[in-house]
Amino acid sequence: MVIKDVKIITIDNRGRIVLPLVTRKNLGLTTNSQLMLVSDSETKEIRITPIGLRDESNLVKVKVVMKDIPGALAKLLDIFAKEAISLVYSEAVIVEKDKTAVWTAISETTGDIDRLKNILMEEGEALEVDFSPLD
Image (cartoon, rainbow, N blue to C red; front, side, top):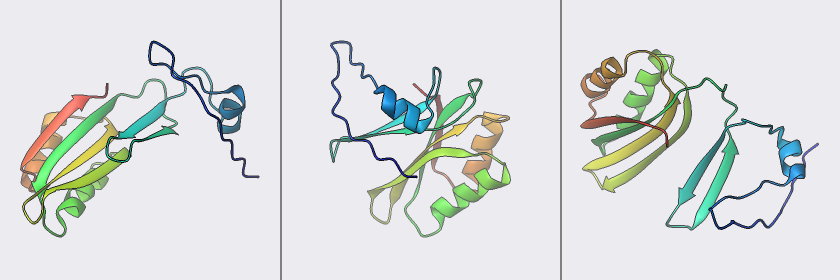
């Protein structure tokens, strides 16, 4: 059974929101459930998605600058697949048509980040690779 729930919620003076009990129950959210928040300044939208990761998960944000050519993103994704790294979120944006694009991903860290960076640069032909902790 599909349950759709629409609520209007308010942001308090500390920037917090409360998810209504019915929403938490419908989605199976409990204390320490992890949610991913994606905000889009262009459309003025916020998406909040349960990501279902274990509490001990160590998330990292990966930002890759690449050439804007056909197949560039596929090469990067293939490396993640070969390294058995799951993605929680991924988005690619063209910065300058036919020149550069930026791929941002959120994943669980596994293994040696410096090694992965080298593989992305060499095999994936990434121009720049930056790993940072998820805020």
